[in-house]
Image (cartoon, rainbow, N blue to C red; front, side):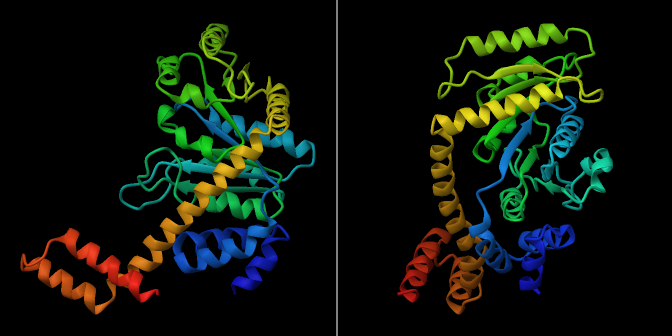
Length: 317
C-alpha cells in the first residue's frame, strides 16, 4: 500500500499525498518509512512562514498570494496550523473553508494541522507535512501558524522567508510585535490597508526596524496590503523574491539549511526514541518489575529509569 501511495504522490496525486500525511501522523513506524523514501526528492520547495496576531487576515492574505503564484504557473502547498480542540484533538479554525476557491485547483494542496497543545505555534507533524509536499513537486509551501502572535517564534526554523502580518485597529498589534515576534520577521505586512491608521502602523513598525541592525545584511521590508482587493500582493511577491535572492547570495540559506538538518537529525533521533524505543522498553518484563518495585517504594522512578536505560543500551550491543 505504501509503495503505491508513494508512487502516486510524486506525480502530485492529492489524494495519495493526503493519505501519506495521515499515515505519517498516526503511525510512527510508517512515518519513518515514508520520510526515508521521499527524502532524496526534497530540498526544492521554497517555504514561506506567515504569522501574526488574530484578526490580521493571514488566511485571506495567503489565498491572495497563492492565486498570484498560480498565475505564474507555480504549484502551491498551504499548511494551516490551528489551535487544538481540547475535546477532539482536531483543528478548529477551518482555514480550508476560507480558501475554498483554491481547493478545486489540482496544483494547490491545503492541509490543516492541529497544534495538539504544543507551545510555539507549530504542530509536531507540520515539518513532516512540509517535507512530503516538498518531495511531491510543490514549488511554494506557505505555513500559517496559530494566531498567537509572539508565541510563533519557531516558524523561523522552518521557513526560508517569514512574514509577520498585522492590521491597523487591532489595539495592541505593535506591542505584540515588541514582545518578541519582531525579531523573526523578514517582511512585515500591514494588511487591511483600507482601514484608518494604516500609514501610522507602517511607520511605527518601520521605526522599530530602523532601531535594530540588519540581520545578515537584510533589513526587513514593511508593506501594506489589502488581501481582499489584491492591493499590494504583487509587491509582496516581489519582496519575497528579493529576500530569497538575498539569502542565496549571502550564503544565509546554506547556513540555515545546515542548521536545520542538524536539528532535524537530533529531532529524528528523539522522536524515534519516544515513539518506538520507549514503547518497546515499556513492553518488557524488566519494565514491569521496576514498576512493581516503585509501587512498593523499594525503588524510585529515577533509579529505575537509569537502570532501564543501561539495560536497553546493553541489549543494543
